[in-house]
Image (tube, rainbow, N blue to C red; front, side, top):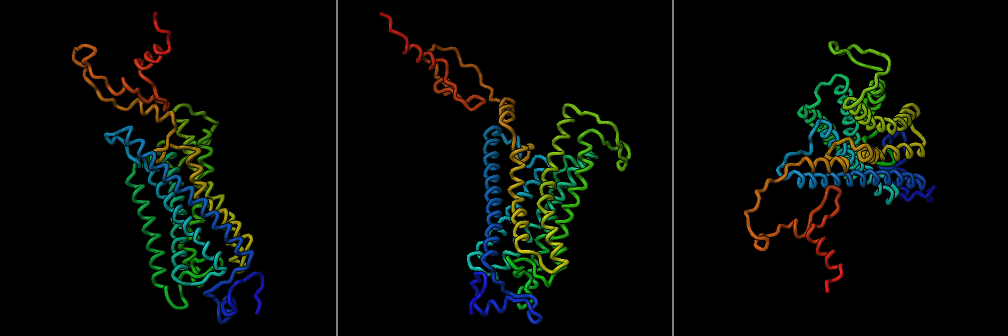
Length: 394
């Protein structure tokens, strides 16, 4: 029996992959050559996000080393403001989400997707990462709106830590309990769907409550919050100082100085949920089509999943471009300014002695590094060079 479209399944596996009244939820799905190519592209997007997030964590470690040298007494911390906590959680979940996409390479190599321990592991990783990213993105959106409009909870790192802990606990319990209860027989929780492993079709409620709901909440909140914050950043919207629910629309009031910088930073922080919304919107459209018709074109599915898989890379790119002074990311000039403001060791003047008996310091012998990273030689060494190049007296 010859199978169509480059399918590499056995005839028995191919028969089990067909949806019938007796087999409504197949435990194996055979991939055509075109579907394998599309799945390889989605795995590539996961690799891109995975490499970007790993690069970011490498830069964070570099920042920690830099600040430990700049402030040896420990007068700094990695998580300085609540947004640092949210961003660290976001990138950690981006890493998990990317891992769930990268493992698609196994299905590409085999040419089929089937239930089992590996399938369950991929489904758990994907749901954990995708749901966690959506909930953390929503938390960033709400936090940004509350702090810039009502200016409450700005320095409450404890609240941010509790919110992040609740997000991780909810996702871990929801995914872990669901996968643990339905892990054997025909009612396995994570099954081929059909190009990779995720929550099976027999559990539509878990699909919505465990992921889709949070994707749509993140999408909706990003759009709703961005509009008033945009007009606030332009100086045309303000909130009452006595009644938090009253907003006033007026002529543009150009903010200057620290207030103007705060407005720009607030709008920049909304770039994260806004970019996430742009990537989630096509995925939501395709999912709604599949809900109404029962299936969606495989090409459209692979395109939207490829774009969605780049969410981790887009978050890393935004952080590196905007440099919002989070996770110790600052400009070179700011690092130099911090170095100038860093307390220097106070040394007592040396006791009176002859020039020959005085011990030269390291800086006098080899020089030191300036604020721009260049090495300055001491004046005595420069004089020796100049004297050696000058003609000797006769």
